[in-house]
Image (cartoon, rainbow, N blue to C red; front, top):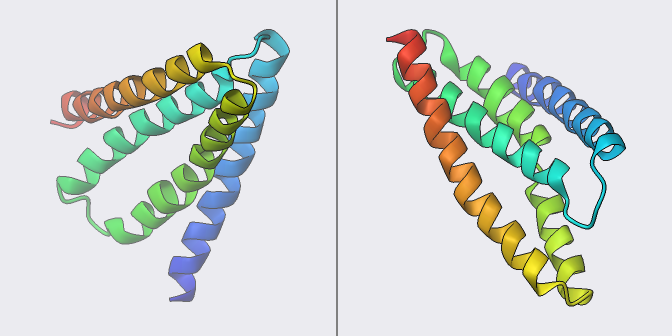
Length: 127
C-alpha cells in the first residue's frame, strides 16, 4: 500500500509543478479575460490520458504502479478541473456569459477531441 501511495504522491507532485509551469509560461505570453492556460492544461491532460490509457488497456506488464504514477498522480495533479470550475464561477459573477459559454464549449469539445486523439496516436505508435 505504501508503494502505491508513493507512486500517486510522486506523480501528483510532478503534475502540479508541471501545471504551474504551463500557467506561468502561458500567462506571460497570453493576456485577456479568457483562461487559455487552463484549457491548454486540460486538453493536454486529456490527450495524455487517452494516450496512456490505450497503452495500459493493451496489457502493459506491471502496469498498476505506472498507472498510479502517470494517471492518478501526474495527470490528477496536472489537470485543473477545479480551476476550470472556479474560472466559470468568476465569469458568471462578472456576467461574462459569452466567455462562459466559449469556455465550457472549448473544454468539452476540445478535451474530448484530445482524449480521442491521444488514444489513436498511441494506437498508431504501439500497434
